[in-house]
View (cartoon, rainbow, N blue to C red):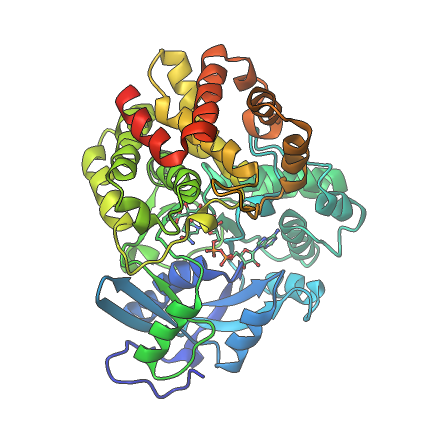
Length: 486
Ligand code: NAI
Ligand code: CS2
């Protein structure tokens, strides 16, 4: 277990941890937050004596929270590039709660302390309980229906935020800022929409108070942090000299662009590598379409082709070329980033994907496609349809997703589908036997494709052709042939 004794080559907290104040609550103590926001805040404490500390919250699994408490709220982060590993122990956490074992009221109470200025989260797209195609709160979501009936014992992320804001208002405390660090365009707006929409169902005065007093800064977050495996834990153990069940491994690259719109103050994150700007949207769209869009393409088609990791896809020339072509020919033209050299950005993404020390599983990225497709591909496809331009690889991506959620791989083995819409997708697959009816059935899911895309003949025809090719030629050959067609 991690203790205060570390080997000499590890960067450890060199600041007085007793001076930290719990000024932020973070919901979603997963791999990403540990290697990104918490690490940045730790660097700030170390270099600038910042006193901003975190209370970490997990609503689902409690194991990490338990382990974190057992090791005095410290854990390690390994930045890995090929043979090089640099290790840092993060010490900026002051408290931790698990929604189930500590009780949701303890979480609401922690969020209602006078010192709390920011509630941030990394909870995956599905936790916002919105309809991915429109961004609207899904009032039929079981957790939302529950929270409308039980405002003080919330099950959902929006319900938790509303409950904590209600308590602060009742206590006459100032509001906090709510900062999403999830991969969605205008993640601050999405969060504001779902929070206010839920509050309106419970108490319109509270909804108005939130609208007038709470800010929801948007962020663009970037760092590849795969789920930990036995192998990466072993690498960490070798370096640390002990087990760290909370430890995490990531690539060296780090980017965090934050809309500077905080109602009760914020850490000076810009001193530790973040960029504070007035409008994050161009950065978010660039990253979501170029990075996440190509990631999802590689995830579905690469997985079907038998490639387990993103770095394995990079070893196939056709996949590497297709990823870069998707970025430059089909995503870059849709963006509004005049000051960014997008070709250099694309090259840097390919280099990051080639980092073989980072074992980023295609199956991990393939999770929750229903929540990811709209912002990664579908808005770009709409742009091309309006402009009469080519979207060959984007259409192939959509067909790849459809082939993947069909649930059987190219060797006839089952594919495990993790998606909040899994049951609905499985039902469509079970009810359709021809390729064309399956494509039509999946395109008819409005929560993903909206009402417009299923009526776009050119788009539907391209997806149909690629779905057909994927079933007859397989993913490797289809990607290769699509390159000459694009
Ligand atoms: P993870 O699986 O390690 O952690 C997910 C976290 O979300 C857990 O703390 C879990 O308790 C929480 N969660 C899941 N469903 C929830 C729900 N319905 N309500 C409340 N909490 C819920 O995943 P990881 O790697 O931390 O990624 C989380 C998110 O961070 C991603 O979905 C993405 O939006 C964002 N992100 C991740 C990056 C990465 O490379 N891992 C990079 C950039 C952004
Ligand atoms: C990935 C992202 O899992 C996924 O969907 O595309 O988590 C990706 O690794 C990050 O956004 C990189 O910043």
